Length: 201
Image 1 (cartoon, helix red, strand yellow):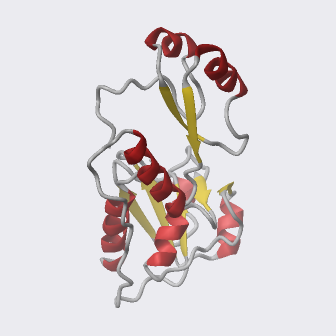
Image 2 (spheres, rainbow, N blue to C red):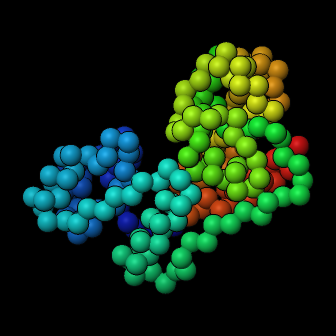
């Protein structure tokens, strides 16, 4: 975890450039998106002589790489990230659909292949109901056609499952964990908690 004294000047979708420049950083760390690194940020790095580091964090392996490179850059006395999930002897649902809560009447964003939660499910011996890669927006009709054995609705905070998802008549497991939507070194904790939740069903 990053020390709380390290300033945060944005997120995946927006950056407070003015605050960033007021802080006069020497190093700036960002998450790469599908559209790569913010071009204006690259320009600011060149003009203001700060080093810009960027990592993809879509997969568990990429999260581990980012963690290990960060601890070297920051000279932290932390061990490299060891991500391991025991394959359970308890039978998991045949296919698992992982999605965020979504809005009323609509399904949330789904985790497809080659996402960190897909990696977690595969590591524990499960199978993702979605064959497509990346984060996918599916309609309720799309989900019904997939016929997953179970829908795991993931969120960092308490939520209401949309009535439309209940209407699909597919078992639903609400999974709340503060770090489930943050690709970080805490993904091991998320994986263990998710495994326990799936085994309890």
